[in-house]
Image (tube, rainbow, N blue to C red; front, side, top):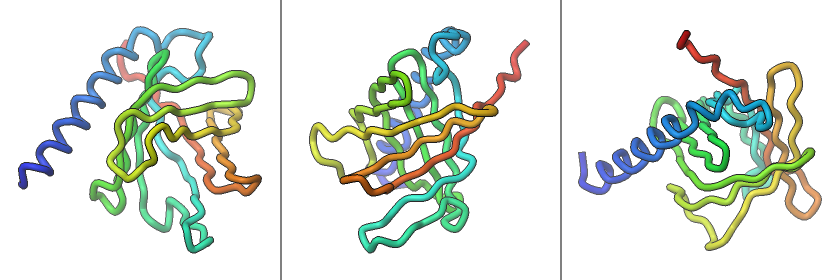
Length: 148
């Protein structure tokens, strides 16, 4: 394993562990429906070529962990590392925003991701628009704790 790859793995493991540990007590906070661990059910994103890629077609799996103020996610495609990121987030009414701090992909400094969201029947749906055009849609399911 290369030194660079070990650094990526170590960094994202630490970020993932931090988010997990710091979010455990907050996950029971009913004021924040996001706190906890989420798994990607399905999604799609619009590529630069204006073609949709569905998570099922790319065999993308992902976990996202949120505490009261921070998030961290890791994604795999066909069982291989695909992307990861962490930062802070904010929400109100039907708006959800992520403010990335660390990401494994190219991103403009200060870039934020703004979504509309809804929670219905245990599914968190995110939709992101750019210039009025839908560019990303995700469906997440909260992972139930196995602790007593």
